[in-house]
Structures are given as C-alpha cells and as structure tokens.
Image (cartoon, rainbow, N blue to C red; front, side):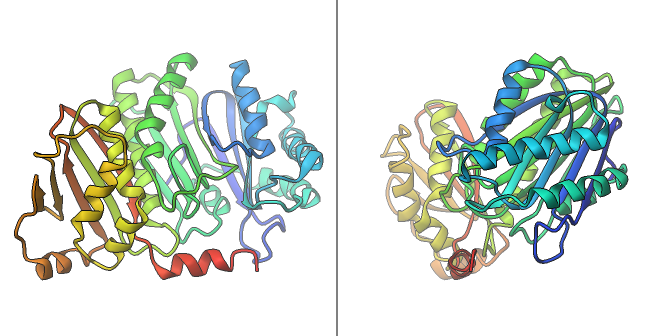
Amino acid sequence: MKLPLGFRASGVHAGIKPSGKPDLALLVGDGPLAWALASTENLVKAPCVVRNRARAASEQPVRALLVNAGNANCATGEAGIWDNEDMAAAAAAGLELEKVQEVLTASTGVIGQRLPIEAVRRGVPAAVAALGDEVAPFAEAILTTDLVPKTVEVRLAGGARVVGVAKGSGMIHPNLATMFAFVLTDAIVDQRWWRRAWARTVRRTFNQLTVDGDTSTNDMAIALASQRLPADPDELAAALEAVAADLARAIARDGEGATTLLTVRVRGGRSVDDAMAAARGVAASSLVKAAVHGRDPNWGRILSAVGQSGAVADLGAVTVSVQGTPVYRGQPLAFDAAALSQAMRSTDVLVEVDLAAGEGQGEAWGCDLSADYVTINALYTT
C-alpha cells in the first residue's frame, strides 16, 4: 500500500527491541501538515502524550512523527521527559528541520523502563535514509504484542486518499488504550474543521473499542493532512470514519489471545450517547467476553451488561439477539441453544440489542476473553 501524496515513511531496527524486529518508525510530510490529536485520558501520561498535547494547543502545523516501539518511556521521572525531547531533537536534526516543535513523538512498550535514547539517536539516520512511499515498513515498526500490522485505505472521488495505520492488541479500552492510530490524507483541509472531524471520528470509533478494560498511558490517535488535493468535506469525513472504524475492528480482532471479533450493535436508544454506552458496556463485559470464547449463548450476561451501562431501556420491550437469533424480548425466548452455540464458533460474533426507548443507535467492538490473554500478560515483562 502506498502512502498518500506528500508523505514518506520508514521503519528500522534501532536496538530498542531485543528481538531484532523493527522498532523505530518515522513519518515525514514534504510540507507543513494539518493535524489533529486525540490521546489517553489516563491520569498517568507518558512525556510523548504531554508534549503532543502542548503542541496541539498551539494549532501550528507539523512536519514529522517519530515512533519507538518496545519502550513506553513512561513513569521514568524527569529523565524520561528529557529523553522524549532528545528523541524529537534527533528527528529534527536528521531531517534538517528548523524547529524541533515540528516533530511529534510517540512511544509504546513496557512502562517504567528508561528509554535507550542512544539507540534512538543511532537509529534516526537509518530511518531518514530509508524513507519511501510504502506504508508497510512504518506499520511493522510500531508493533508490540500485535500479531499482524493494521492498515486501511479509502479512495475519494476526487483522487484524494485516506490511509490508516494502527497498532494495538491489549490494554485497550474506551478513551483510547495501548493503541496508536495514524490516519493520513492528501486532501486539502482547514485545520480547525479537521480537528472537529477527528474528534467526532474518535468518539464514534476508537472510543467504542475495548479488549480488556484497561486504558493505557501512552495512547494517541493522530490525523495528518498533506494539503495536496481538493476533496468534498462530507465525503472526506465519511472516509475518515470508515478508516478509523476498520482500524478499531482490526485492533479488536487482534486482541491478545483473541479468537473472535465481537461486534455489538444497539438501536432504540433514548439518545445516540445511550446507545453507544450500552454497546460499550456489553463489549467490555468480562462475562460476556468469556461466554463468547466458550460459544455460550448466555443472554443473561448481555442483558446485565446493558443494565449496568447507564442507558435508559424499556425493560418490558428490550430485545437481544445473538448471531441473528432472537433470545430475549421482554422475557426469555425459546431457541436451539446447541445450534446457536455452533453458530458462535466463528471468527465474528454479532450481538444486537434494541433498548426500545428511542431512535439512538451505536456500535462497539471487542473480542473474546481467553486463557491465552492471561498467559500473555502474566509473562509480559519476565
């Protein structure tokens, strides 16, 4: 997959990951980039998040993004703050940019370990030399526990493209999580409009994504535009949301230990917010996730998750369906449990709920909860 016009990217091994896999990714705009940021709501934030937030407040364009994988550079005190600054400075110097403020940074990996900044410094020249128009090297270099890279593209009628790249597998919950999402376009945009559109997109996509209920310290979603081609704003907004939704589903499908993508669709909400909250509540329920892993059509867990979500519902008329089979409509419905369990033996499980309280609709994505998730996270640092 090619990058949109006006972008170059690379991914190299700088020596951060002991595995020898790529761990330093560089993205560069040929000119000033309009951009928008969403980042973790965790009180504990890595220096890259704090610095990028401060940059966002200035509304100035940027030129580059440097990402390291294998080390979160979080909770490492003042040293970590300076390491993050040095990381940005190394990229600015390597790209011969006038201002270090033109570089955004992102780090992902283990929390509480000092970033090997000398490895980053050594890796930057290689990353600059490797810059090209392919997405794949960048997508590979930002991974941690992911099993696969995640890339998506949508083409607009006028020729502009929207390309998304993401990483994320565990520590995923609404208000972002251990995920990075970088969405790029060569469309011409107004920065203020771009930021409003991105905020709406993140609310409806990445903040409807949950794997395990843990929101991390380093997460961010950044949208960048190289200002090359005209585009219809409505079409661009729709493409932006489509790319982000596909990335969110890809992260859920690649959840640590996951075997099944869980999609929860809710209609009949008193409001869109209610419907989205109910969908999130079901997708986030450990009991629902465990039932999905066991291919158990235990609708009581779904109904309970709806009830604790805070969404208003007409309890006498609420309906629940699993894989298209109605299992509850104000009261239990007769269904063939063995046949439904067999239907759940799929890489995709769909839960549908009608709150019978209005016209609001919402969707959320998650995955099953397996013993492998416990194993992966029990041994993460040892």
